[in-house]
Image: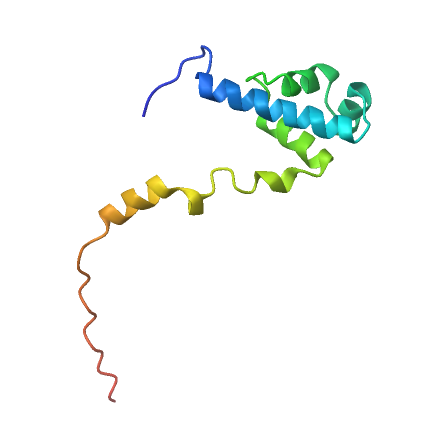
Length: 111
């Protein structure tokens, strides 16, 4: 596994964070909520909300999920890292399975 230092995340991660932040901002604006009001309702500071909406990488996951919950969008996270969608992991798991499984010996339960 590659070790990541405390430097900037990969470009793909930054793009995804920016996109998620924009989605949060759009959802908040559609609900007609200002940043101060919404941040207060989420129990976070306005600066934290700004960091989420601008796609900064240092926001705690719990804070991000709280914002999604308050927007009614928490269920949209259901597919994130879902093992059912992990095709690469499934292939690796299948490769480790034995090719042949020995049948169980019949048990004699005659008393």
